Length: 183
Image 1: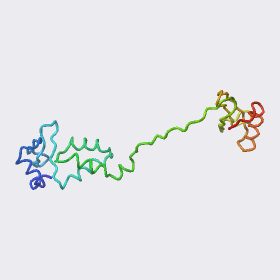
Image 2: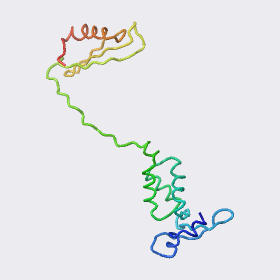
Image 3: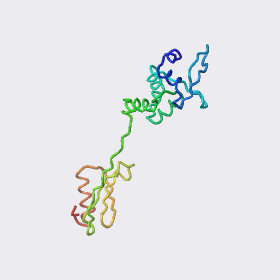
Image 4: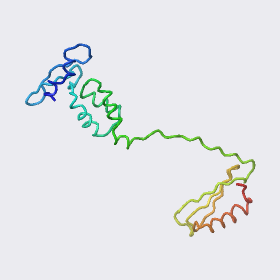
C-alpha cells in the first residue's frame, strides 16, 4: 500500500492542494517501518487507501459479517480514508449478493377483510379442533364451537378426528342444543 501511495494521482492531488478537509501526514507504520500517508487528527490514524486497494479493503471488512450499508460505511470510515469512500461503500454493499439474499424486505400489510356482524345468536359459529392432547378417559382431542354473536363457547371431547366423529359431535352437541347455524 505504501508503494501504491507513492504513485497514486489522487493522493498527490490531495497533498498538493488544500481544498480537502483531510490532513494527511506521513507516518511510520509496522516493522520494519514503512511510511504511510494517514489522516492523523482522529484518535486512530486512518491510512489513505489507493484506488487499487479500495475494493479489497471493503471486501475484507464487509465479508466478516455483512453488516449492511450504514454499518459498513461506519466500520470502514473508522479505519481508512479515501475520496468518495461513502459512495463507493454504499454501492458495493448495496450490490453484495449475500446481503441481498439475507435482507428482510418490508412486509406488506394487507387490510383485514371485514366480517359482517351477525344479527342474532347462533347464526354463525366458529369451530376448531384442539389436539392431540394427553389422553383422558380415552379422549385425545377437543372439538370447540363458539357463537360469534354471544361468544358462547362449547367444547366436546373426541377420541379421534375422523370426519364421521366430527359430524356426529357437531350434530349431537351443538345442533341438537342450539339448532343449525346459518353460516
